[in-house]
Amino acid sequence: MPLLIALNSGLTVLCQCITLRGAKVDNHENRVEVILNEKFKFFISPIEIEIPYKLYLGSEKDIEDAVHIWEIFKDYLDKKLMRRFMNELSVSGERYGIKV
Figure: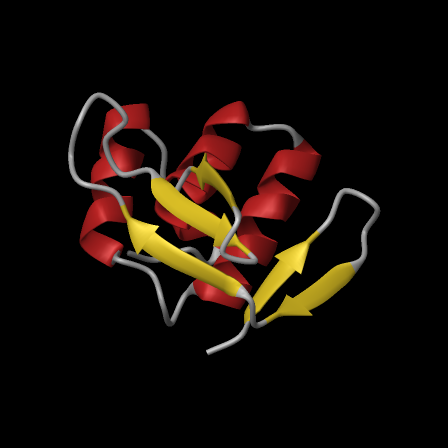
């Protein structure tokens, strides 16, 4: 399945050359390994933590971002993992339509 990547410029690109693998639990628990063009490797945080973190930050823009990310990825998220992060950050998305 192709991956959509949103760049800081606001441009969204469709990449079919990226491999995602969940890293094993270690001191960087839940990170996601991204390999670009079989050459460049870096790690990103999972979407399941991005939404709770945006809610935790709490600015109008952060809430808007959290809702937008939720709308895009809600069918693909590990809801149990996201609920864990929401509990750890003591946030709820219910009033914004984010239900896990």
